[in-house]
Length: 290
Image 1 (cartoon, one colour):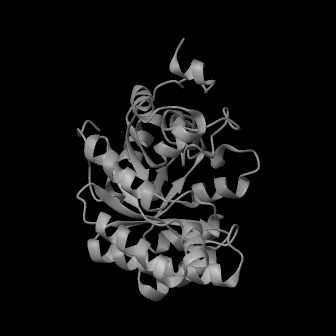
Image 2: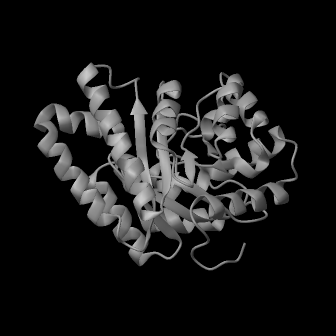
């Protein structure tokens, strides 16, 4: 019995014809939710053509883990930050001193050579509704933007129900040279606003859902040179495995769906996704077999 069968997880999809990158995953959280070990997750993803990942931290502990994994696994690079909801919780429970201490820990991690991005940071108006929590989120977002610029790292933006405020803050302080809109959730008009600012838009498995018509319109409005694809595992599993735990090995479902949606040959789309990811995250890593 395979490890996927033992854990009751979806089977491997058909391998992609060319390699791609999962530019946003939480391998540690995937283990916590589904039991899929990180080493197995990386190996299974490689079997279906997902041969590199960006491991994303959401707090100090998971950011340290991202750096540790990237240090020992050449197919992985790290993104580190306080998630906006974590920033709000930290401020609410411990005040500005507690938030400043978390910032300092992230700053120290940012010096590691395997860190390619600052994020996921941003604003979340869905889960954080109190004024003081939202204020702390914006303070944290601005701090992370400054750190990304200081270290010349990519900024990975979490945006949930906060489109206008995300652009307001980025326009106010000036965006870093490379910005990825993680788990893009806007419509075509918002996609055009982001593209006009030079951002990359990362599409998750949600784009495959029947209810996601506006997201598909956004994908059609996004130039191919600005399209990225992600899992956000263990969440947002694409059809036909929606409702089960996600992992990087399931990314081919979303890749195939987008290639068909955008009327691009699959081989060419895979090559584009790989090139876009390298451009968005400051260059290639691992063995360059793309």
